Image 1: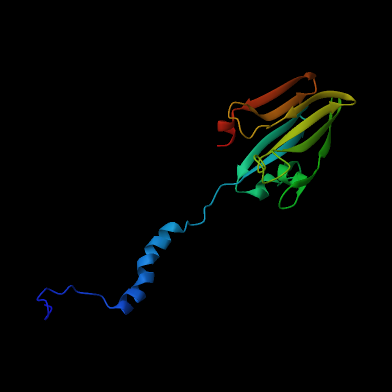
Image 2 (image 1 turned 90 degrees about the vertical axis):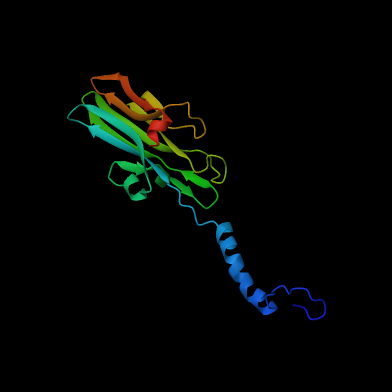
Length: 185
């Protein structure tokens, strides 16, 4: 009770208590505002080559794995498509190719495999996307050039996952393709 006015006194916190408690009051708010680091899955596309002399055919496969760059490039006939580019922090500087020769009953087949970046500038739209291609020749005859994955923005296209050439009928090439929703599972 105030001795001069007769009114009831409101309890007041001392100023030092407010100054000391302010950081404690702000801590929950800061915790909510500061986002925890996000973790995203990284997709590593690779190309695999098989010269199957027993079945008289050659096959080039396009596939990928999440979060395992070692698997994507493991093996003598498997290459991570990212290992076929030279890049710095901002851009892809150079594209490399792999050339293999497959001796089958109808002759020697040359298989050339290369990367197809979504963009040469890594910070641009599709800069983190990587596709690939293969060119298959018998002697000087071009049997086919195939782009495995060319479009990082449209879900309506098909991704080629396998190209097989049979030596007994090299003009007939088997192509397997799937929609992106099945490929990126």
